[in-house]
Image (cartoon, rainbow, N blue to C red):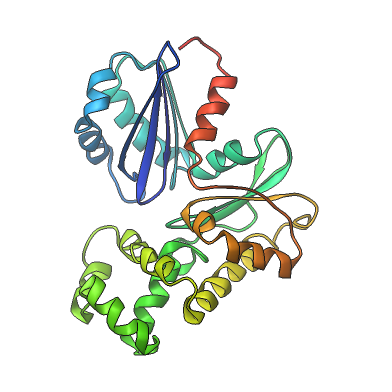
Length: 286
């Protein structure tokens, strides 16, 4: 049995594939080794009923996740997975950018971008992945992401800069107070996920001029920083994964037209393409 996972900061999608090619889907919270320990991840995995049912049958694991960009971070996930799935003979933990490449352009050159809770990009030359601009996280960067737009929304609400027809509705929908916002951002865990949690409100009002301008400017800034850094960005397709790219595709296409680049694939959930890739490139039987 093969287990494939794609994890952002908010949610992790998992698919198990058994000998009859039956797919078993499940979800957990997102695991990021910058914020979570091996013990914490193991505890959450143990709570999953599907994992408990199939733990002894899993032989290969392929995990792609935010924050898994260095050996010392990857080992945090590898230890948790190996301690639970004790029958696994192969455990590969890799960066979410690698997952984005395999889900969008696994065999040909192209640029792959992540636009979800956070944001990032890389260029795949057909053999190697090159990242020209680092991802700075939700405090310094993550342009065009859910956490980025969440910061703008909250700041505009606190500064009373949000249009009046949206202000009260936003406040009432999320029961906002200055104290509650500060507590969620400065004291509680996962502030980046909290910031991104306001994106349904943006989606519900995506045709409002305030929202349209905010989303357009944010996506354009992402392109300016994370796509223009590649000299050949007009020569290869620009691919996207993540909920922001998926739900605001129309705005992204407008940005592409104005910035004269070609959009390739837009995938809301790369997990399905990752499963297809690994099934097509199996080294061992399931």
